[in-house]
Length: 478
Ligand SMILES: C[S@@+](CC[C@H](N)C(=O)[O-])C[C@H]1O[C@@H](n2cnc3c(N)ncnc32)[C@H](O)[C@@H]1O
Image 1 (cartoon, rainbow, N blue to C red):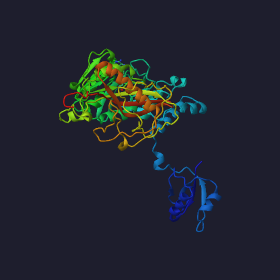
Image 2 (image 1 turned 120 degrees about the vertical axis):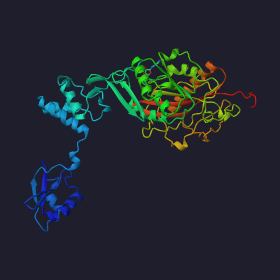
Image 3 (image 1 turned 90 degrees about the horizontal axis):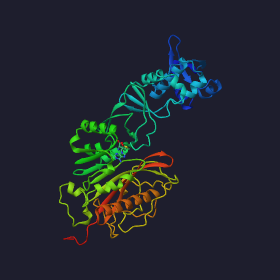
Image 4 (image 1 turned 120 degrees about the horizontal axis):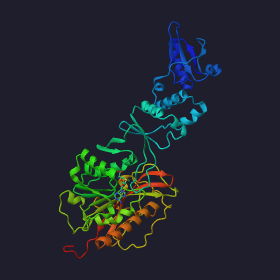
């Protein structure tokens, strides 16, 4: 029931203000002037006249309280898409004879959020799950399509654990799942029912887009539809990307996406198992984007890195690379994804852009006691702003030095489990590199990125590692 008080027009604004001040004005509804009656109805939240009387100046006239449904205010009239969807589905349930109790339960399965891929709406996996919805198919999907103004509806399921990372998307309305997705100036087309597309990884795509890879040869070991291959080529300026992929549907999309974005000539696709790649020593940078772990690809990644070191910033700017200056060591970056469990004890879940990996030194070739961290002992690190972020860079003789951005490594006592994971990865890579290329190598964590949390104890982490071959002190001119 809705109520209003009737007041004289000349008093209406003053009384409205008084009501607003004491939170008795019903803002969901509009004031209304009654033509011919010379009265204005002001919507109020209470039907208790004594409460109203306490707050309104009644000296000049009497106030009349009445039950009335005044028109909704403008803000109330604007329905969100989620409200619209719920209203449409509610109507459908009623039309089909569902009782109020059942309707109330079923409405909880109508989602508030979804992904939009062109004219296709991808519903979350818990949407419309009860058996009752099946009886209402296809009219329920037509209703959803109509409410959300789209022609195709699909429902998300968990990405399968098979090695192709196949999505388990179910098409509910429409005859195909091919979509066109655009972000950060890059177009991706793919079949949503056959290839995975993680919109949650947008922060990583943006981070890669901001890398300076000019002059670099990059290998993307798990290219998929080109989710990272394309930002390397389109925005980071990589000279060439070798993209590895073994899922034929992802490969089809990858080819299309390279063409779509005009970078086909700069990419070589390697179809098949990346562990069988015959290439070696070609890469400045290797991208390992596989969850839950890319560990299977570490050996091949090390094989792919150039033995004498890759491009560094100085050479990409056209300056002569100089082996004599240690701070201009050629560098490699391995870029990898991991999903890690954590014990949640000190997890910080706010801004995840910059993680403090203080206390984590580069692994020198002489560190042999790094253990794999226990799976459930990982938790996040304290945050530090970007201007305080510094690179650990310890050479094989243990000396600290400034990196070429002139930021010094801050030592800190706090050892966290993420940093232990970083150390474990660095040590493993260093061993692999020494075995593969010979000589001494150092491996250092450049950055640890928390991408997202899948569950309270499962975090998606990305680690940037810089691997450098150590120059012998006896090289001519050193
Ligand atoms: C996480 S998915 C795709 C990630 C990709 N960056 C994207 O979002 O489009 C990983 C991809 O690696 C591929 N893959 C997994 N193991 C592989 C292997 N040993 N060789 C080649 N491709 C592999 C899968 O088929 C899948 O498309």
